Length: 211
Image (tube, rainbow, N blue to C red):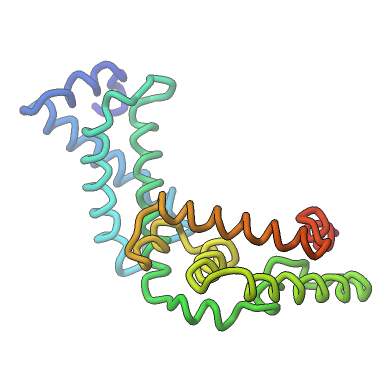
C-alpha cells in the first residue's frame, strides 16, 4: 500500500522501467487524485466542469517530472509529500497561465497609468495621504511613460502591476525568462536613475504608500 511505503521503496521501484515502476506510478496517481481536490480548492473547485481533465493533465505532467527528478529528492520529507508539492506547483502555474491566456497586453496598459498605480495603494487613505499619493503616482507614471521603451513599459505593467506570470509574459513576447529578467532589470535601473535625477528616491515613493 502507498501509505506504508518507505522513501527507499518508492525510489527503488521508480528507478527502473518495469512492472514495479508501473505499480508505483499507479499508486502515486491515486495519492494525487486524493490530495489535489483539497490542495486546489481555493483556485479550482472539484465541481468545476474542467476539474477532472485539468487534474488528469497535472498528474501526467507531475509523474513525468518526478521520474526526471528522482535524483533531486533529498529525503527530508515523505516521498509522497514531495510529489504532491510538485503537483501543486505545476497546477498553480498552469492555472495562472490559463488565467492570462486571453488577456491583451495593450488592454493592461489602457487600465494602468495613474489609476493603475493606484491598485497598489490603500483604497481609503486619509485626505492628506491621498493628495500625497496622487502626486507621487502622477510623477512616477510620467517617468515610466517618458523613460521606458514600449516593451519595457508593457512588461513592467503586466508583471509587476497586474501580476502576470513571467512565463506567460515571456511567451507573449516570444522570448525566454532570462531575456525578460534582463528587460525588467534594465527598466528598473532606468527608473531608479530618473527618479534620482528628479530628487525622488525609491524610499520616498515607498514612504508615500505607508499606512
